[in-house]
Length: 266
Image (cartoon, rainbow, N blue to C red):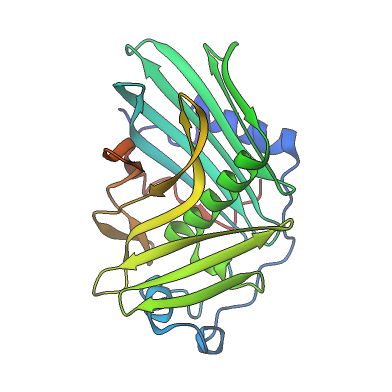
């Protein structure tokens, strides 16, 4: 998939339209720099992770914008995929837009969002015919834990807030929980020897099953890490459901280093 014209494509403009339409809030002032004192008292594994992510000395990010390119599996077929997302703090907000190319010709546009304590999603064929739509408590929980996953991989300073709690598992893993709008979600972060996340696992997401939405383990393994402008950035990564018959990946690819940006207003 071509990766030129990063901020000029139609999908990027669609993200901007969704941000304006939803009225995503923006913190007018940057957050204070993260200090060693902010890490004190956290589990040792969590401290290693935050130091690997180079948060100490940086202002707390107000937002992160990212582009993901790769492929997505719809039913049994893999197809090219591109996605743009925007996450913000301190009011928890997430907007994600994705375009699939069916047969290399027919587009499906999907939008996922979490705002004001509620999650929702919609998918349209040719950006006109609705083929999937969802709201409700399962989406509220699923979108919130996806925001937590985004924070772990892309914006770790989002996690240094009173409504986030940490628990030691062992020297190579920790649990992290986030509360919002009376709801709590959690995930387990697995680290490599450097402190880099190599996987994130949660049971606070719901898979679309023939019998309906089913709570199922969801993971986002990361195979490599790079650096972009002094910040660690996940390399090849994927998302997968852990079904009884085994792991089922449904999206694979990488974040575009040219598109990652912090502290950009919606």
